[in-house]
Length: 292
Image (cartoon, rainbow, N blue to C red; front, side, top):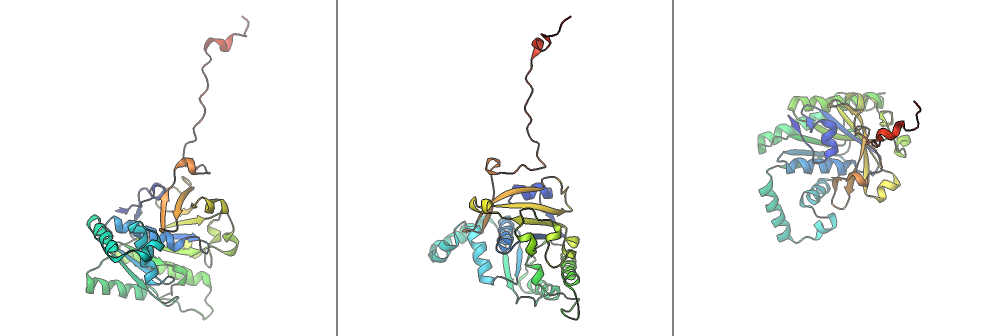
């Protein structure tokens, strides 16, 4: 069973969604939109009727809830804060009739929570609220703690981050859910318009463990057009050489991502057929100059 996206490009490169028991990573520089992307995916899953557990170690619970509210209600963050209560309640009631997906947001202090805490949380939610998530979002992997390795004691970042990635993937397999998380680009990769797996910050062990790994790229030109380039770096669900990169639109006021028309894109996707000009049929005139 796969859980589809509400974005055509991601459905295309994953063969219509991510499978369960997988670890999926979004990589981007500072302020590009890692949390925005995770919030958008969470909103899309809720609209499909899926239960989402959003674990945050970066943003406050209220901030995550605001972003997802703005996305699912299709209002800007500024309007959301001044929306009259009766209109807000009406929008929520309309949403409840459309979908039965549930969201629970849990905040942990930075670098203090590991899969031990997440496992305990999942068991508690199931026992007390009957809540079983279909997707888990972890924002984000590099600021989790490892359950096996204690920081310090001469442990290098490669080993430590790889251990966290392995533990998260183990949790996904144990609870039969896909897990989404994020990571940073290195300083060298931050200004690059074409990052690759070697630009993963702190540990190359993370992309080695992940099932699906994409980079979000923003240039000045793309920023002016309200667009983000997505480049797939690792893909266990389909051929990563096909549809290597594409552009999607971003609306930061509503915390939304959206599909962009082909005419608005400046790139040619390597997976698509480029139309070739048809040769004109010359008929008999082709041989007119030949002598018999």
